[in-house]
Image (tube, rainbow, N blue to C red):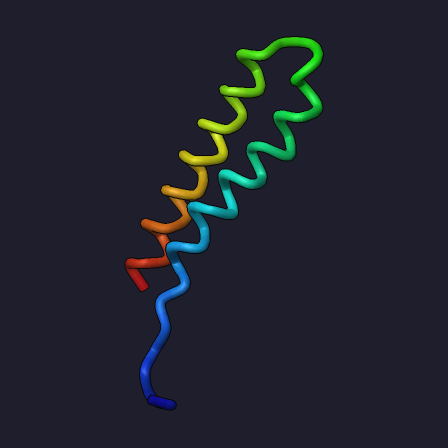
Length: 56
């Protein structure tokens, strides 16, 4: 089991969503749609990072 390479690229999706939620809390009082938009941007960023990491 020590030789098994672990693929942690899926962590980027969750990290992107958490980052989007954290940034979205700053916009929550001003505009609710900006909160939702920042979550979607974080999700998209996480998906792009995952695709880049999985190529290697």
